[in-house]
Length: 283
Ligand SMILES: NC(=O)c1ccc[n+]([C@@H]2O[C@H](COP(=O)([O-])OP(=O)(O)OC[C@H]3O[C@@H](n4cnc5c(N)ncnc54)[C@H](OP(=O)(O)O)[C@@H]3O)[C@@H](O)[C@H]2O)c1
Image: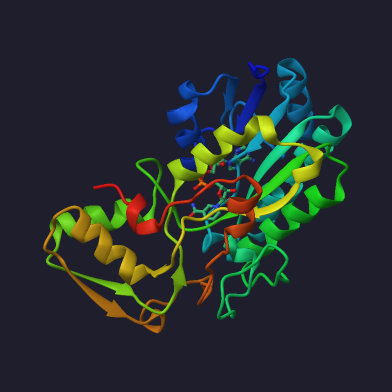
């Protein structure tokens, strides 16, 4: 059966995930429209309506977000403007125009105090302004009557695009003999191309029955120290990676100690196997 060609709008087109989606989209038979912040500012409800009315999408992938975790502590309004009110604009448009929505959220909606991977059904308790603004965006979607939606929580994204831990460590390791990296925060390094592939492959399956929240992270878990060590080893470098505690690296926004997301709901629902973070590492 030939599946229907869908019109798909991707917001936040200048960002890491959107660029990963674009990187892979030629393998998928849909019409993609990429809109960066200049072309479509999601905080501007009029612009949302004008741009989307002209494109008549079947599906919107919202990869736009305020992602500066530390700066959000002092720019609260800017974070909520994008991550709550911008998302609410898209949700209202989707609800009024019967458009499906794929939205990306974060492990920061949890408090980081768990000792086992977080399930979609676990209580949220964001500890940072960024996390609170992202949770507010989730609620805006859950409260809107959107015909079909996925809220996909992910974490520790990296790729060849944008600014991310992988690229920072690789750059530093190429010029230094030693690197200090925190060893007391645990999560899951997640290749943004893996997330992009999952999304692209499953767009035609988005329907009211499978609407809801899903966790997409690579399988397994690691500390930032483990991740850095693997990056160094994978790239054949000799840099010594030294484990330090987060107390030695204070940041404005306190990072969750443990933010491993359980991805089994997504794997079961879509019969889709997500590879281990260590296998996903390029090099
Ligand atoms: N990166 C991670 O480790 C991580 C972890 C967990 C969850 N996530 C979530 O994953 C999603 C994708 O993240 P990413 O890594 O691709 O982030 P990113 O590289 O920072 O991309 C976000 C994009 O959104 C754009 N944007 C900001 N405000 C906007 C607005 N008002 N209207 C339209 N676009 C706007 C940004 O443009 P400017 O550059 O012009 O501001 C940027 O191009 C986000 O929802 C993020 O919260 C990311």
